[in-house]
Image (cartoon, rainbow, N blue to C red; front, side, top):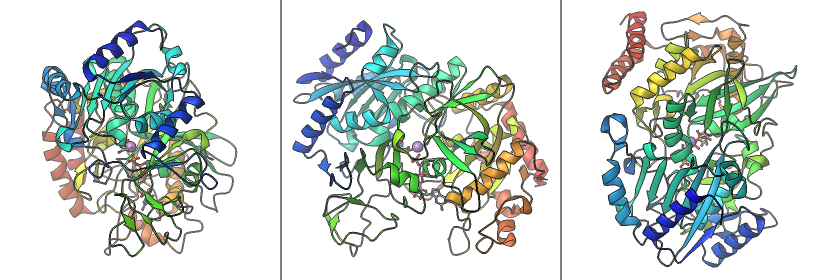
Length: 584
Ligand code: GTP
Ligand code: SPV
Ligand code: MN
């Protein structure tokens, strides 16, 4: 129990509603962790993995109908519908409190209520914020313990203040018909019921650090973005930082942990964050970023010693694996792990599985939860309370066609337009169809806590306020050939593109001015070591701008922009200018 009166009063009120058998306040200690794990093992909420091979690691199955974020059941509950905007689901606060109140009524009967104070961001930092999550899921507690800083450290930062985000979560009946993730940005409140999965249930992550925080950022003059943060150290020892926004399951974790190609002697990539960035203008007039999280909730499939060794090394201890293959000898496996599949195991549904089984063993959105501190590439600056200075902002997505490998926007305003119109193929990170192209501005479509038109305005205003703003780029690692195969090798080789980006930031290299932005000259992308795989002509193809596809693209952009009644005029004029430059 902590002494903050506002926290106590709110917890009491929520306990009256949900009626748990008992209330446990989390302190974040090792004893508490051991106790919770033992309780989970007894209830089979967790399965102990081979403690010799994977010390401190556990396995968890979610309910088979509860394996991804549910965007259609996620709501922004502002008093005025217009304030949620054309891209969010809206429910009035009165209706939402009433509807969910009925579902929460008695939802913790026979269960324990856990009260988790948590801190997002470095200890003592101006960037950092405190939340309290109430939950009836021990799995959520153990994940929050990895993903945030829980217990006393959070309450110490909060002190007597009433300034905390109130998050109420209950698994409820895990019924998709009674599942709602509601955000009340005007009340600093999140109510989530009916799911035990990742972004629906770990309220510090998308719910607070993006939806509520984006709203706070708009009010307070900073930004909360769906961005990784990485540092690139050059052979002279200079480190420059990049923040990059890609939609879910489009490569943020992989890029954040990149291992340089062998020919890049003396280069080193440092991981600051892999999913979320909070950005503020620093005293020096640059944009500075912190990662508010303390762990990685990463996509397992495709993670191998070849694609992402740093991630694989991070998850060798103290990790929770969710919905991957559980092998007979109590280890884990997933598609694209780069090792032989187990002869026998259990798939993500808990059914016996062998490599001959027709279905995939791991769910495409199966995940690992691991402490960032264990990552071999974790930046020495990742807990710096001032953050790190950002030289470039990079947008990107999965596009089989249209978007070239990389281009630079002409200026901040044009960069905001590039972000506002970016599109990507949907992935398994959210329920629904996979592989459908949709507009996903700044990779924030599912995560912006207010009207997206106002969000674009906020970006434009920030651009005016930052004396020395980062340059803005767009990348696409996912162009495919006529057989549907990715043309660009990706992963570690993406550093070749980041190197060009930094050279542009330092005014060290010219570019080709095209209608869509500045493109690299073919000879300026360092292909040393992969000349056989990516010839100059292949690279030319990756950098080409196909008139027909862009003609379709601008039509689609036009109907996208029409959705916004609060579209800033700058975005519209950037669109008009693009159409004119393309001569279409
Ligand atoms: P969220 O955690 O959902 O926000 O995802 P993320 O953006 O962090 O994506 P992540 O790095 O986990 O990558 C998702 C999938 O894309 C994995 O299966 C990766 O193997 C694959 N991927 C990542 N980078 C590349 C790349 O450069 N090229 C190709 N072809 N695939 C990639
Ligand atoms: C994403 O979907 O962007 C994730 C996973 O990072 S979740 O925590 O479920 O949002
Ligand atoms: Mn994400």
